[in-house]
Image 1 (cartoon, rainbow, N blue to C red):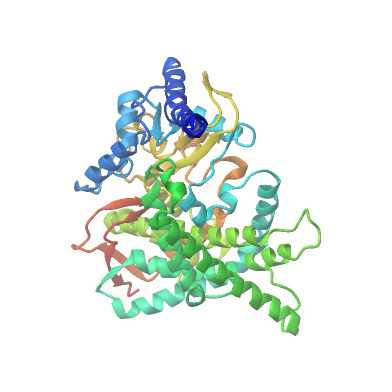
Image 2: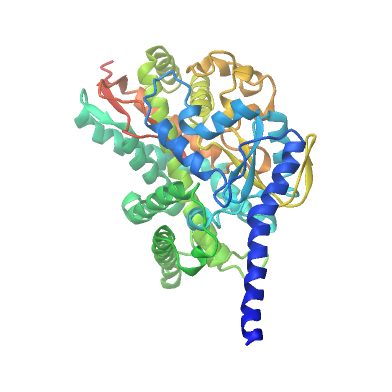
Length: 510
């Protein structure tokens, strides 16, 4: 009888000891280690960390109105903004039981990116997050990353970009044809650009169109919202292992749906080769992936899971980032008529009333300044998440293994010490002499697409697509802001307009 009682109690005590070790002792030890080096932050709260505070601060921030020239930092990332002001540019806070060191000093950010393969490795996504982009280029490491990056480089650089230009122009022409019936009427451009960028990435990367990829886009959009909702949700010990939360079940269903759609696309390519309708799987991104999937050499072959992961990444990033960028640029051109006129004059000088071409696109200096300033204010992400793979040094700090790091870009991008007291204003002239001069040759002061060899593979394509769309719009229309527009940016992974962006289009008659 004594043994029957003793054994369960022994298991209980072991489990309790492990639980207290991971959820109390380790966080308190890390907190003490960070504090002793001058990296301070809000105190660790048992199990939840600071997640409850973050959720409350975000809710309060979104309830307040914001002006067009207001600082968006306290609205988009209120917890980080508040804690930088309280604890300094480098601080530690707690995402549940995990420590997250936030850094916003450019020199430290540069050091993290320089050592990203050895010490500061890409962070593994949460369970729901992994369903969105888990096996894509942005979150894989080592040899697998090198293999996938080589494929993506081949698909989105050099001669490939030149071949993509006609498809981008055709997609923009389709959108502009639709706009002819909306002249001098209010138009909501965020959704217009969503259809445009969906069409472009479908054509150039997958040899299809928006309608064929519509299901995938819809499921990715639902996944994106689920990821955003779960970023600061605490996983309760033991309970999550007993049953899956509703969001996890929904994300698994969406993941399965996306995989089924991608499998249909792959099968279509395979069937075309088998039937003799095509002599290869194609030279676009999907074709390169399918070819690698069938490669007999293990070094070059990609798994089905990886193939689907890369398709999700390109479908998502290829649409989402350009969609937001175009919308925010058009908003600012509608508000700042002087910059709209400067950009239009440049476009007319280079292209006249002809469609854009790559040679001319490279000469659009004013438009490049406008794009860079918009990326500074409304960049596609808030930072680069990393994990400390082993104990290492960052500047003067010693960081323990298995904690997270966030290299913040919204901080440096909006730092008055780097950009001046008018940091919150839209002033493209900052970039008149290039990025290096604008940042006073501080590499990590401006990195909307990442830094170094791991920077966004689609950066050049995104810039070309943006310049083509803006050039073709400016050749045809003047843009003014609608009186119904309400400025309300929100962060759902990218920065998006909560209520859309309403503008008025006036056709140019000369």
